[in-house]
Length: 346
Ligand code: SF4
Ligand code: SF4
Ligand code: SF4
Image (tube, rainbow, N blue to C red; front, side, top):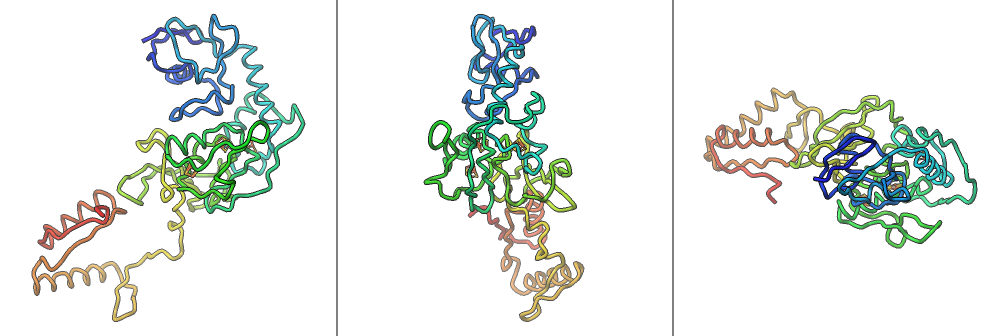
């Protein structure tokens, strides 16, 4: 393990990591916009620059590997000035729409502008204007707020394996493009939304539903399948308005389209809230006691007349492990048959 020094602190770190990773592991903050711990580094935003003894110019800490005896300084007057310059240049081509932006309060660019006191257009000039809005059902793509960090492209490729988007064009015209610049048509996992550091990618379903600071976050588990991803429900006025997932959970913050966007059923007025029994062709609302007595009576009558193997149980991947365990126990020990199966076995 190489011994390195960061900000006068001697550290033993693994040999195959970058300066940024070494700093992160030791609680030393270096600002970035384009780096994500789970994605390959690109060295694109130049905010993570640091001074390394013996190297005349600052280097990007996200792409520079640690070496034995390396001495690193993460903050100097020159480095902080360069970081501020980078931010001023980014913000010179940015709508500065924080008053109405969905990302306000949860935007890495806004946080850095605050920290470095970047107030407005230091370098006024041509700005990118994109009128076209994407007609896809889930993700608002506001390319004027895009800082071309590339994280959405990387996560779509490296985590999701879909490659639905890429950087198109060159220079000032560069932008994140879909195939033939048509509306986004992909798996809609929303991983790109999760890693976007600005308001360039936001969930359409959450638009105008509430400011970040007014939201109550409730940790829970997705009930769509037996994988059991951890999810965070963002709740306002007793309504779920967004789902995210924390990167420190076992699914590492990644979700599928159902887990991330399929939550509207929770507040749907169409939801069944009382048991129903079908009498002839009509369903009739009954109490839980009536429903249990009816189901138990019918199962018992079938078993008495035709034997336990005339009954079979099919359970659901949308139930928890515990519910499925209780169900098979009921079929085997309660009814007396091994005719039990599970839809996930398809
Ligand atoms: S993306 Fe961030 S900095 Fe840009 S307008 Fe929205 S909140 Fe403000
Ligand atoms: S939603 Fe998922 S599949 Fe679609 S572009 Fe974003 S990361 Fe790629
Ligand atoms: S859309 Fe977001 S994640 Fe993608 S490049 Fe732009 S700012 Fe980065």
